[in-house]
Length: 235
Image: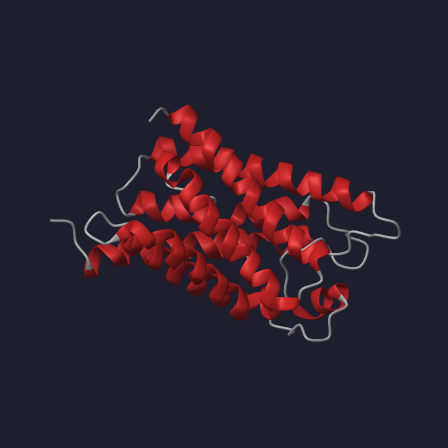
């Protein structure tokens, strides 16, 4: 498969993840469970739609973990990153455009990721928890680590991977159930970056907390790529 085909697939897939997941958070009114299911469904559906083309990474952290695990080249990883950030940003722009046509709608935090008292206040959601920066970093790092172990295991050529998309989608659903009240769940730098583009910074600024949601998922993914090779070495 040509790289350009893979990049088109990644752009579309990441677009769908952000449009479907963050769109549900912005407009769905379905609560934590609904948003968690929405994110899981975006990954599950794209796993079968484009998995045979690009692997359906949809996430720079996933591409990093796959690279560290030895399943893709550094050049291809950076190309995937570019496609993923573009896809996520286009989705965020369209969500903002749609919201702008809704009477009385304001972007607010725009489904961005964050932590601490200011973020909780900006969400206007009393059920969010005020976790500190260290707690947010640990949350995102550990959950991305587990996410990558599931992905690497489910897609391993030695595994029964016909149902890999289901396992990965359910894992992402569980991840959101755990961490939406803590950080609004990132585990995906492209998803985090895209929402910052349109979040309202008048009370709380998403950009100031973005570094954690870039670095922590990448650290977790890289560790998973290394650890997977320890307990499941290639023959």
